[in-house]
Image (cartoon, rainbow, N blue to C red; front, side):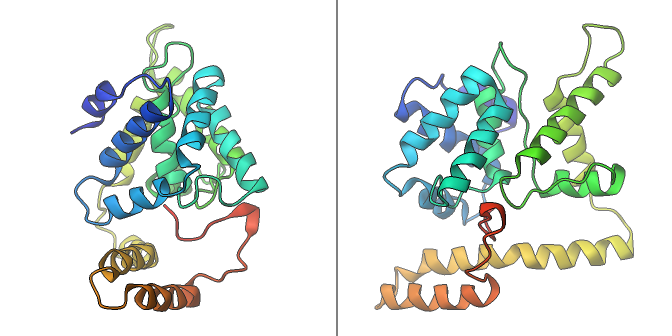
Length: 242
């Protein structure tokens, strides 16, 4: 399922159930066939408050646009780190994008993830992005950049590219493997760090099959704490959440 098909299948959000449906579609599209996708998605939805929080974000996106929805999450996270727990901006902006992609009142608010971060770092280093926690100024600069470039690339007035088309071009170019040894070494090191949360998620998803699942999960958490210090609270940051 490509992004056009997935967005076309997304219902209009009118209640908690439809908010969850759109969230699930965005996660299905975002994770694709990788094995840890269902576990990570289920972990977000396990909290009793998750449905109402997803609806709140959807209502804000509908009323004020994607940036306002992002700012809402960032503000709620400053108040309580449990708000939409386990949902980081890389996949959180996928949900926001699905909420705004068919919006006729506001422009689409595309995905800001690690691929976008690396592209900006390489091509527009004077516009640094922070993508590992809910940093609203970065998302504002990201959207302003897309608006600027979509207007500049569109030719005649009224024929601008959509901002999500520009984001797709960035993703396609940034995700392309480059035959450069120095870049590849840096990228491989970054990927090894990014693989840590996936490893812990896979371990947790398999822990229930053992004879002592509670003890297994406790040991996994203790191991994860060695890589993920509990006192990392910068800007409400939840480390290793994509």
